[in-house]
Structures are given as C-alpha cells and as structure tokens.
Length: 271
View (cartoon, rainbow, N blue to C red):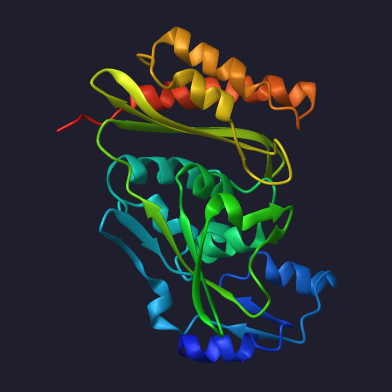
C-alpha cells in the first residue's frame, strides 16, 4: 500500500509483519532474494513531511525520505556538513545514493554501514513513532547487533536529530574498503577550547557487531593540545579494541590516525 500521512504508516505497521519502503536499496534485494518475506509493504514516498532536512535549535533534523545524495551538496553547513559530505562519498555509488536514505540505512543496521557510526559518534537521537506515540533512543542504544536494533516491528524510524558541531570542532573519516563494503573505518570529532582538547568522540566500523566507541582513544586526547604525539597515542589506543582481529586492529590504528589528522586540519575557529 502507499501511505500519504504518518498515521497511515503506523496503521499499516500494526500487524508487525509489514515492511517500510523508502529508498528500497536494502529491502528490495531482500524481497527478491527471498531473505525477507513480510506480508506486505507500505510505501512512504508520498508522505510529504518525511522529507524534512533542516537545522534548528542546534540540531540537524533528518526525515525518513532524505536521500544520501542530499548530503553531497551544501544543504548542511559548517563542520558537520563537511563531515557528512566526506562520509557520503563512501556510500554505494550514484544510483544508490540517489534512492537510498540515511534513516533506511540506520534501520537496516548493516555492521559496515557508514551512517551507523556517524550517528553513534555524533550523539544522534532517534525518534521511533509507534501506536503509543514517539519514543526517543540515543544512537548508542539503538543498535543491538548486525541488522538488529531496538525498533519494534510496529514502529517507524521517523526522525534523526544530529547535534550541530560547535565552533572549535574538527571532524574526520577514513575507510578501508573491500569490494563495495567497508572492511574497517574510523570517525573522529574533536573539540578544542583555549588550545586544549575539551571533547573527543571516536568511532570504529566493523570492530564489533555494532558501531564501537573507542573510549580509550578518546581519553588519550582529552586534556592534550591535539599534538602529533596525542594523535599517535589516541590511534594506538584505538587499536586495543578487543573485538577485532589483529589485522583489523592495525587497520584501526592507521584509520584513526587519518581521521584525527583530518579533524585537526579542519578545526573550525572559535568565535
């Protein structure tokens, strides 16, 4: 069925067996391969308000019909926009980016997906709309495993809110690929206040069943002057993640170093 308003979508999902069609880049291959067999599909492409993409009250608000390619342009400003433009270049190829959606990727929760680590590192809030209303889940609590989230079958991932990166923040992303998927990747967002790192968030892709925050690497940066030595220490700390193979740990060290170098080079000025 094709829905035209959010209420129709939630009514369709009430049976717990209906799948949501937005971009279809994950759902359609599953349906045609026989891997997924929902009783029916609800198409949300005619729900106008689901195309929301705006910056307000210190947040970037993203609706379920916002395509990957929206982040290739200048639609999102500042350091956050620069980071999202870097990340989106690694997602699929032009036809995929033209149809696929950020929220669809988050709901699908592929362990090598770029948007999942972005949401985790950036502290995104995810709104799940269901028969009882909206419940909000932090990104770090949303993903529970490969292709698994806390979203219930009768809920729609209706909006994601990403905090705008403050002045004095630099961000970077580096990825090592095999075929069309990431073997490993690292993302970093680092805030420098009065010459000292006041906040750091570093995430790793394919370090475990869900996006992994490299807490030891973050701790190695906070309180430093974001020097070469601090970058080296943080990269080495990222390589201590114990859920990855030795080869992948070496990749995480190298990729974290690259992401942090990008972040330092891209620091926005403090006003």
